[in-house]
Structure formats: C-alpha cells, structure tokens
Image 1 (spheres, rainbow, N blue to C red):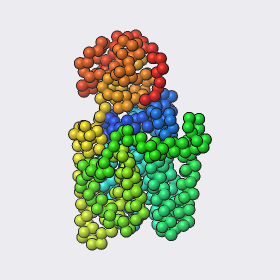
Image 2: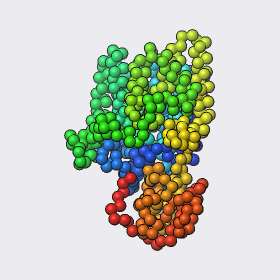
Image 3: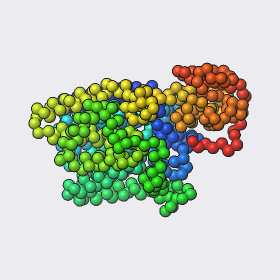
Image 4: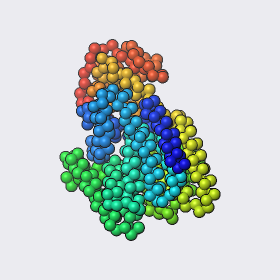
Length: 475
C-alpha cells in the first residue's frame, strides 16, 4: 500500500507541474530571470541583461552555470526558440521539485519511519501548494532543495558506508554552491553524525564538504579575481560580498521588509491544514530526529531574523518539514491514532494540491498591494509578446511601456541581440527603437502586429535603429 500511495502522490504532483511548465510564462520575482536565465543565456549565447550582482560579484556562478548547461542541452536538441528552451528548463525544474518528494520518503526511511508514514510525508511534499507554485521557476532555492534532502537522506542512513556518506555530503556541498544559506545543512550533517558517536563518518562528511568549499572559493577566484574590492585573490568573493551586503549593511531591506511572522502567516494562507499538521507532527519528531529538526528550525529562523523576506527563501526547508512530519507520524505511540493522523496528512496533501490553482499573491507572500490577484502568469502576456517580437524581421530596438524591464523575461525570452528600454529611456522618434510593447489603444504611430490580452506589440514606421551612446547591456 505504501508504494501505491507514493506512486499516486508523485503522479498527482506531476500534473500541476506539467501544466505550469507549458502554460505559465509569468514571473514571481525578477531573480528567477536575472539571477539565472539571463546570466545563463549570456554564457551560452554571448548576450543577456546582467544585473548588478553579476557585476559587483555578489553571486557565485555555479547556479547560472547549471542553467547554462540546461540551455546547452536544449540547444543541442534543436530547441532554439525561447518558448521551447524555456519550457524545457521549466520541465527540468518541475522534475527536480517532484524528486524532492521522493527524497522526503528516503529521508524519513533513514530515520526508520514505516513505509506508509514515509509515503504520507512524500505526498505532503508532492502536493504542497507553495512547493508546486515554485516548482518550475529557475531559482537557486528550488535547485538547492533536492541536493539538500537527497544528500541528508543518503548520508544519514544508519547503514550508510563511506561511499554513501561522501555522496550525500557532496550533494549538500552542491546545494551550498547553489544557495549559500544551505551551509546550515552542511554544518548540521556533520553535527548529526558526530552526535550519533559516528566520528569516522562525521570526518568523512567534513572532509568532503571541505573539498566543496574549495570548489566554491575557486569558482569565485576564476570569476571575480579582477573585480574592484576583491580580496584574497577573489576567493569566496561572492560569499563575503553577500554577507556584507545583506547581513552587515542590511541593504536587502531596500527591497521591502516584513514582520517576523511573515513566513508562518503566508504558509498558513497558502495551505492551512497541511501546515498545521506538518508543524504539529514535526514537534513530535524532535526526539527521533533532533538534529534534523534543529537544522530546519535554524534555517527558517535565520530567514525570520532578516527584515527582507520572500517565501521562496525557505523553499529548501519545505521538503525537510514534510520529512519531519513523516517522522512525527512514526513517533505516535498508539496505532489507531497513527493511522488516523496518517490519513489526515494524506487528506491535507490532496486538499493542498487541489487548490494550488487558486493561489494569489497574498497566498505566496508577494506584492501586498495586489494580494488578491492570481499568482500565475504575472507578466506572462509581456513575455509572450517578447516571443512574438523576436520573429519580426525589422526588430532592432524594443521599448516596454507596461512594466519595468526587471519584470520581463529580458533577452533570454526575446532571444535577439537587440537593446531593450524602459518607457522613459527611448522616445518614439529617437531612432533607437523599432517596436513598443504597450497597452491596447496607446497613442503610438505604427501598426499593431501582435496582441496578448490587453497588451499589443506595435511596429513603428522606421527602417532601422542606432544604438544610443553609452548603452550598456546591464539591467
């Protein structure tokens, strides 16, 4: 029965992820484009709008490099249209998200959780509405979640030998390259093994993670050794800059601040029954999995302490919370109560998955002024007009009037080496632009050549463009 529950949960979780991969061209937050797709497009195709983080050296190139690998695979497969390669990338990230549910099952089993309860935890992860929402988005948090849960499952299994310990620690080390905050789980892995009295495996994990730390520092050395302000030859430059900017200087607050309760309130809005059960059962898991519980609590607490909050920041902890819920189920002593709570978890999982299509920005903790708006396909019409603009033979400069360029798909969606402008940067008669994305009915000269909802792509009556003096391919 447990295997049937697991398979059905994975199949059910695959359906909304597939739908999102094929039909949602929207953006949750600009980072899913400009810290992943744009630098990856720049690596593979030689152009893209690079944000300031990849100029000042605040990001490690490991995650964009991973996305660039996906772009290279799609290019070799002949998927050279943006709508095609972006769908491929979303499918891969959806598969990564779904694999996290399998990782939850394995991690719960590593703590000797019975198969049915482990499958219930996996179902909770597979159908957890916020986790599904973030699934197809090319974000470092989504990419880090899988190596964290799989790495811990491998290395913390009581029967793991040296090979599985090294493999698990390597996965956790990879997660740190993708998302620096995953270092909490690297420390937790060594600490848990040491607390168990398994000194040999703790040293193996520590040595493996040290190698991955060298890889992290070397990547920064290669990328940022020549950047102004880089110390130690650029070694660990992105980590040092990130900590200085966000922790010491607190400049992330410039993007907005939220109260300490933000994550708890937002998760409650998105999936109340699932969150209530997972939270209660995770407390029951403290005695069986104290190290895992503490690591998850520290990771979430660390983000609670930072004034700037986004729900995506705690995505790597979501599978661990589901695994703890499964361990908590196993800790329930009375067989009748254990069966009832297992059924309740499965019902909560199904209910959460069934309402995933109704999520609003209020449910995912973004844009308080638009809390009642659907969280799906935001900026999707703009991005589909970028797809349309790419096919216009006279395209030589494009202005976007309906939103800031940061809330568009940029050159990774346009896939033409064409300058992009915000509304106030390029007058119609400047000679810099040939096309404009505007509201239907806007007072613009030229011909409407494509439509998406209430937006239009207008082709101006020009025969060419000049690149404005000082134009830079930076966001």
